Length: 391
Image (cartoon, rainbow, N blue to C red; front, side, top):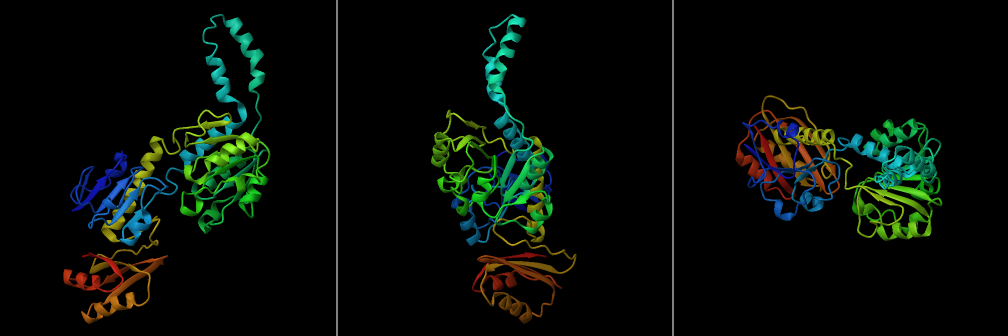
């Protein structure tokens, strides 16, 4: 029986995928084998000896101490793309809000609520509407920083709106590149992106290397009165630099899904309360996706969409035993494991070995079932972090 600790409100469509006869799910389960969460902040204390995996029902994992968990052999999953459409639609709202004076117009009309005469009301509206005149998105230059699951969808949306779309992503994957339209102009660096865009929208993850990525050194390349949209993460922008750019007129607007005390109430700033993935559909998609990934890992040892382990998938045989081994990414460990199997006359029928930075992961399928004593023996090999048997 696997024990799964559920933190935050996880959609029932995802939790219902765990069979009740093999999984115990609760918000207070002790010594869990896995944790499923959204925004709850994890610490080292959550990493009990029994913990094998953490599943984040969303893309960002800045609420999880990934490096520390990796060192302990804990696989951290996320759900890239599951909430992409929800974020894309909010970016569309941000684009429209930036150009059309919508919020200001609504606030003006609300100020007329004491006017009871319809003719007088219409007269005031007609006389005042020119102060809210905006401009169309069609023909404007949209710069996209980060062309992954969300960024590529925003790029396609921009093209459909008739915008000139350009993007920059130094870590663009082959899969993401295939999704991109040939009409998206690729920029050589972040400075070029800002210098050639009327509106820049951010779609990069929160990582140590992206901390304060948008700073004064970058913003000085922005076109005069440019608009910046941040529906990615708060940590990737330097708030002081944003304030300075707004004061200097380098930026005319900053529209963000992450309110910060320094910017609330400042002219040109609009912020929403972290609504990017807050749709019923996105929450269900994330929950189902993380449940599927967790089920396959716990029952078969396969890893899909991990932020700290390599992607490893091996079709499962109905016979014999599967051994999953996590180890330090150093030479001779796999050879030592295979030697142990050979010493016990255990025949390997299939195997897969992959590494990611400091950690390696192995799936080895053997012909016969194996004892717990063999698991202990493999676990004693220097450099092995953990061993799991699937008889």
